[in-house]
Amino acid sequence: MADMESQFTKFFAKLDRDLEDLSLGGDFSDASGNLMRDANVLVLLAMAIAESDEPGTLKASAPSLLRDGKSLLAAADAASAAAAVKALKADVDSPAGSVAPVRWEKAAQLAPVMSKVVPSLTTEIKRLSKNEKTLLRAGNVDKVAGASALLAVVAAGSRLSVAETTAPDQDALWKEYCDKFGALSLNVNQAAHALSDGGAFDDYAAALKELEKSCSVCHAKFSNAQ
Image 1 (tube, rainbow, N blue to C red):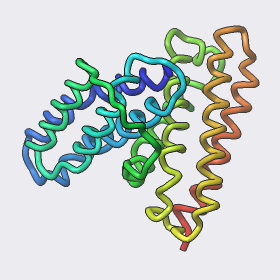
Image 2: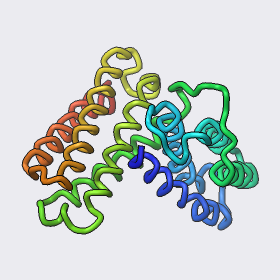
Image 3: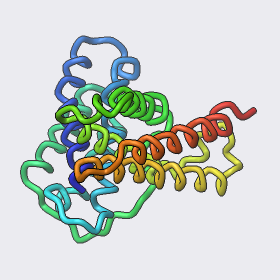
Image 4: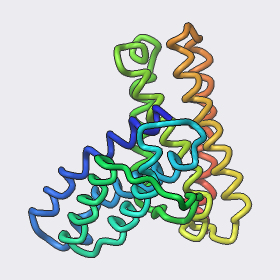
């Protein structure tokens, strides 16, 4: 839960800058790319936090965060986007809780997640993992743990999005790939945390290698399919 909440905080902090970018003008659909990227991440994390059995500071507000995150994704102009961000901030500051259970749903948009979020996360992990010395520098293990946890959340939240891939008729295979990617992402997450308790870098590197392989296999099937 701590890794997911740290990622939520990281992307939540980007919203003000995203709104500033919108204030520079231009067509909303063209200028809102980063905002929509971050909104998709927040929606996925809200579902994951709500679904988790672990306690956390954002647990009570997760249903409201999901609702207002979806409103942000649906924003058609800067004013409605700003209103949705304001509501999200209120959710964080004054969690109201909800009696309605949250279940995984087709809430996020696959394209910005796969084109912007996943490449950014995997690039960061690879950069911080080029050798043991680099990974063990202050803060880097935590960054890798957070990024890999978010990859697992993306995998879980993408299971219902096969229609947005280039092989929309391959629902079962898509879910299989998502589940495998999520499991391998969690392996990297666990191996990263183990390093803080004396775990072997070679075990971590092996887990990361398996994750990278799964990326290539899935991309070949669902991005390049004819």
